[in-house]
Image 1: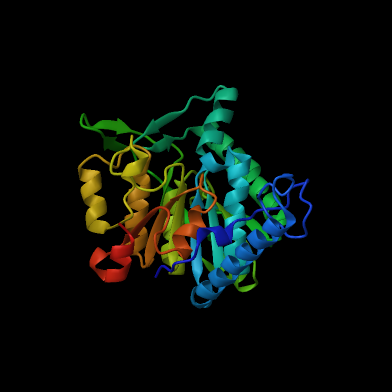
Image 2: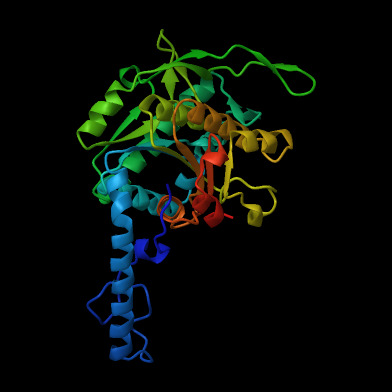
Length: 350
């Protein structure tokens, strides 16, 4: 269920260094053209707006308290430090509201960059990375080392008690090496190398962390039964974890505002759809390349029991909170059957 809360209430504005008043704000308080009386009126208006927003939010805060959200963020966000902070700030709000958040991260751009620096070639097929022995070593360095640790550092700064783990830890994700498969119209046989397909998920370690108020930060790297490291698409891991945890929501944070009817037109945002609509978009070619694994992950998550999947932009300062706590949303909501949405939800989401 979505609720209507003014987005302004969720801003994380901080006092400007030149601000001469005692209230935190993001307006130009140092401007000599703004009178003290006008400032007080504006601040009181902001306070009233925030109070109304909190009152409206209270039922939904209670609703989501104790619920599980799986949030997946692609590597693109971690290449942009300000965007990374905005994303984790929103997750911090969910965490402090009592939502049990599991954050799954990718690392594609960083992996490509470091591979190039080390002279390791990169090849992508249908949005998935081909991973040889040198590539899997770089993958472990980037995912389990660079990105996971940086996210944990930011979590510490934002007072989130977080623990970094990977699919290898405590048998969280068990996988096998993908066999060569034929892809494309010409049926080319592709060996993806050290890329894994999931066999099973054991969420025991996640539940123990969540039960103790800790937020798991999960790298998608996994291994087979012999301990051979395997790279697994982060969307796939997030969907599997969401289904295994019976999460209330799976939230996929991307560089796009959501699922687009036309990839070249950000204004073609699709506000909501269902599995049937998702298949139609894929069949018509509107979902291609890197979006293909996401579409598969969305389908797997919903069929696995996740109630709702959201695709939002990590570039928006309200991407997650606006999607969860406003009626209009900010991205794309996907459900099993759009007819299950209430008339109010369908009318409020054009």
